[in-house]
Image (tube, rainbow, N blue to C red; front, side, top):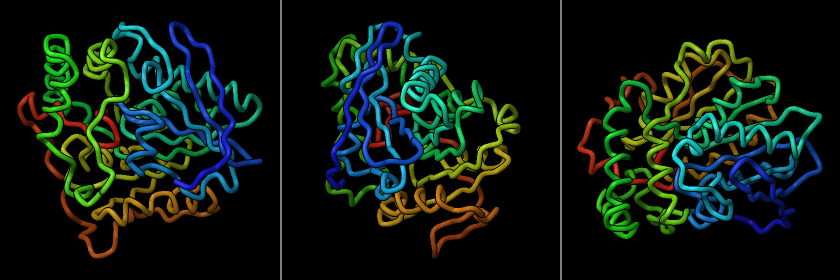
Length: 306
């Protein structure tokens, strides 16, 4: 990620202090929300979701979700539910852009945060960019079991046991060549169980509730990842009224997401079709939902657990 002088700040929230940075500008505000158990720093180290080029015409704000990275929190599962995280995002938008709508970007848990915030206050946003939405709805049941088992594992044996379990799963195939891929959890050990139990109790909004969202939306998904399956992205694309879906099959294509997001936000007109990376089958049936053992649910990728 290219170095850009950043404005750093903090905002007080109930039972948490959120740390954020703003780069780029002047221009309208875009805010990025990271995935579960990740942080701004972890995304920077991983080299993913850097949104290169976006801050040339906009102010780009990144923040650590409560309890993650440099933000504070307490070990209470209800504090980390998606609806609470959405309220945090809305408060940050009000703080940084009180008089103008904001573009919201999110990865995994961050994508869920954005959707819940957009449903709560649709007028607060102009466009949405949702990367690797996590397994959801009926298909999320095995994931819930995995997250609850992981929370118990941390309480009994510490976070190192969770890290060891996550390393067994490794990254999805599309990230296999990522030299900076690491398995790490960027929040204090004392908060891990609460965050995992909250993720187990949370979900994306039901598809039917999304039909009235007016925002042009770019969906970015990658293949071969059971924690962030294509079925979720495709279902969102089918129910959001103004959505475009791009599916990455290679690391190079994932690296192009910053350009795609920049072009999407700059464009006046967007094609209505589903855009898949060249050389792939656009008519492929959705991938089946992963229903592995709870242990398989320990794994996380750079987008977060979701």
